[in-house]
Image 1: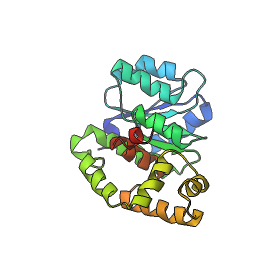
Image 2: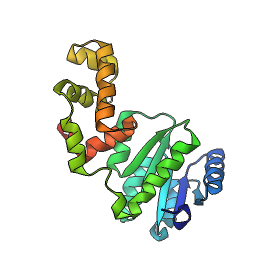
Image 3: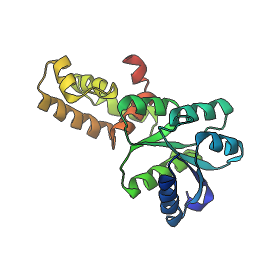
Image 4: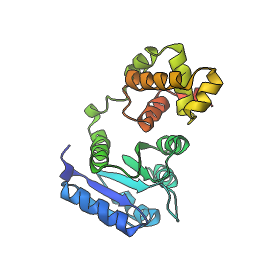
Length: 208
């Protein structure tokens, strides 16, 4: 989708971050609006139209996850990306359960954010929404060995390699190999994307 056919809303309480991201995305051809708080963005959200949201996770008035939950309640949910400087798997799970399509940890390369926004915008086009087709994900999941599924379970719970190796009584190096195999077979580019796949397949509910 052309970058000038939708608006990217940036929500961050830090002015240098807003200014930097706004400049970057404007130069890349995006229409950009910046907001200094979740509250100020929510006031404009109902009339946002075709829009993507890039929001910081930790803000004083309302967290990024709480913002997504509020948008859901308002019926104004839009493709959203959560960025944070202190990310972990539980945060990624909470953000994606609330509707985020991606979760990016600072610092990140400019291309990472731009690519994430373009993926988020692809949801405006129903034909583009085939990456998370459940049958495709299930087919990939079925390629995992039983031990790889055990390691996947630990990964989506946010466990370290050391903890997984202890729980499964296997060598930490073996855990690393299994992790790499899981990422390759599931075709996940990063851990947040793997978490998103797990949510789509209801694996997180199974491992509560």
